[in-house]
Amino acid sequence: MRRPHTPDPRSSSPSAREEVRDWRGRHYSVGPSARALTGGPRSVILVRALVAAAAVGVLQFGYGAALPSLVAAHDRPPALALLPFLVWTLAQGACAPALHRARARRELRAGTLIPAGALLCAAALVVLGTSSGLTAAVLGYGILGGVGAGLVYHSCTDLVGGWFPDRRTVRSGAVGGAFALGSVPLLPAIAAGIDPSSLPFACAALAALVLVLGIAGGAGQRTAPPRWWPPESDPRAAALLRGADPPPATDFTHAQAWTAGGSLPLLHAIVALSGASGLFTLAVLPLLLLEGGHPPSTAALAVTAFAAASGLGRLAAGAAAERTGRRRALALLLGAGALAQAGLAAAVPTGQTAAVVLLALVAGAGTGSCYPLTRAITEGHFGSRWTPGIHGLVYSSKAVGGLVGVGGAVLLLASAQPTAWPAGLAAAGALCGASSLLAALLRRPLPVRTTPAAHGVWTAPRRRAPM
Image 1: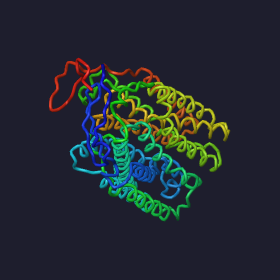
Image 2: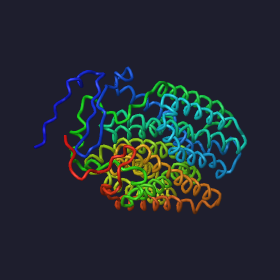
Image 3: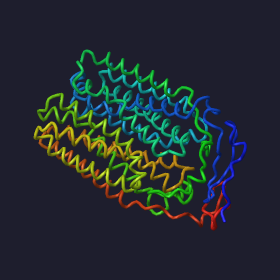
């Protein structure tokens, strides 16, 4: 008979620490409290991380809206004006694995990385507004801005995931939601058009805002200790909960995850395909609407709706997954996004503003939900111990998505054939549909029982561990 859990008398102290393990053998370090470790509650850590993530999201969600203004200000063809954003997507996605390795070695800390990333983002915005050369824009906005946004986004996601192991799916989704929603108040003004003569001032003002909010959100932030668990809840009870998604069978290493039933390659493909779909729409939808004869107000409404729905979709994805299951929620949301983007291909040439805005809402929610749900699926399939590193590899597939999506947008705009532009939206919908089908194929891997333990790596036991 299983013995009831008797709390350690020391656990009532905010500075106490108790080492426990659940019925599958996973170890947890319960306590001390976040207040004892950082001087403040977990809610303060979360809010500050959300502020920093919201500050830098405008570099992704605002570029497509600003593309017509950049074309007018620098007298560049739209295809060339989109190249800095193409490089930005490559840098922002590809830096995730290297950043995780540096954090795992304790070489870099969130309290340093987040302000440094905000500084790089601010510099990128200044370069974008003041430089008339394409090379400077690509290097400044693409490289500096992409790396800076990656530093902030990935650091905030891992920071929040470490302090909220009991609510990791919902709280990590909140970081992604803030990343998208932070740009929403600015998008109507950006999409309505910025006078070319005022572009340097507008970019400098935005850079100052990004820097201030990034420093306020990141300076002094401390990462949670390894395997930390809040003392107000019992990790063993959480491990026994069996909702729509049962707890993972064991903690897989990176090598084990690659060979565990093909789930990890599928996650890479899902992020790449859905990322290509969303980034293509985000990059060219405002310009396609303007070139198609829509007024600037329609373009502003559409891009704002897309970004707002992307943020809200990331927030709601975690709650939806807890009810219906992560895999099912991901497949349904990506499928809805695919249908919406196919609808945009038909609605953009017809001039139906209400239909365009509604479809942009659905498309944004569908493609945006991919990132928090794939992270949750990664943890659910491979365990929490190496989730940041494994998901860093999964998220890096966004770079492939940027190459396909934004690179496809560059080629489409270079073709100078407006009649072919709706076909690009239809192709983006097809990519999103393919990612939905792949999501439906995801299956939880079986525990690895034949790999011997080494260097403290725990593999699934042959019998239930004692309580």
